[in-house]
Amino acid sequence: MTVLEQMNRFSERFGKNIAVNHTSWHYYRLGTGAPIFWLTGGLRRAALGFAFMEGLAKCHTVIAPDYPPVQTIDEFFSAFDAILQAEGVDTFALGGQSYGGLLAQAYLAYKPKAVERVILSSSGPADYGKAWLPVEYVFIVLARLLPEKTLKNLLGGGLLKVITLPEAERAEWQQAINVVMQNDLSRADVVSHFAVASDVIRNGIVTPAAYRNWAGRIIVLSAENDPTQSKKDIPRYERLFGRAVEVVSMGNMGHTAALFNPHEYVELLESALN
Image 1 (cartoon, rainbow, N blue to C red):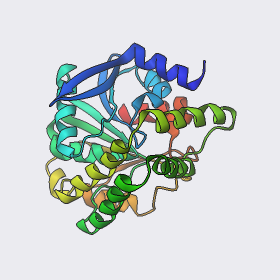
Image 2: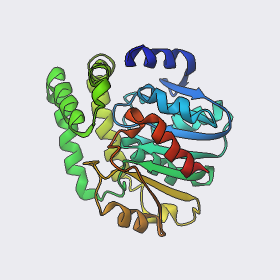
Image 3: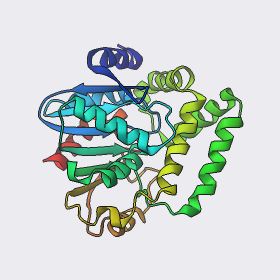
């Protein structure tokens, strides 16, 4: 069965839909046990992580949304609240990979009492100062003005520089990523990616003050060969949360270990969740 076929099967088995403020949100719910709310990365489609979620679901309830092209972080908050309420979940572990880590840090700041621990995987601190806003605005303008085919080609090329594809499945994964990029995501999704990030920055959501009274565990998963990670990340996290964080090394598993090393990745997640 190809990667695309496995993604489609996963979506058919575990996919659900919910309408929040006239926007349709697609999400996945599988497994039993202590719940983990998982926020996927910049490809915006959680089903790409079908293998690791199925592994994690052996001991946990896994809930993971896709991202529609909304424009504000408040729309994410409302949808996350609605999904968790629909699934009867009051407290949970919160996980975020890459772009999902930014969303996780923002949601934790918004709803700290519900989060028992946060797992930030291949994701840096989201305490960007407002000096970053002009950069985000430039990306938004480019996303709106560039021809859509050119925009997708640029994004696809950038993603493949970050992603380390397994040699044995390289062609299948390239096909799956290209199908998502070309057929599933739209210009509006790209605009949303930057608009929501700029909204988090503009509203100063991720700050030390937001976590001052939160005592949950902070687990950071980082790979040595991940080009998006910096040696400054851990000290920045510790300043952000006001205390030490637990660091779990992913060795040389790369930026997208959840996709390409699902069994080993689940083992690392289980160690963080127990």
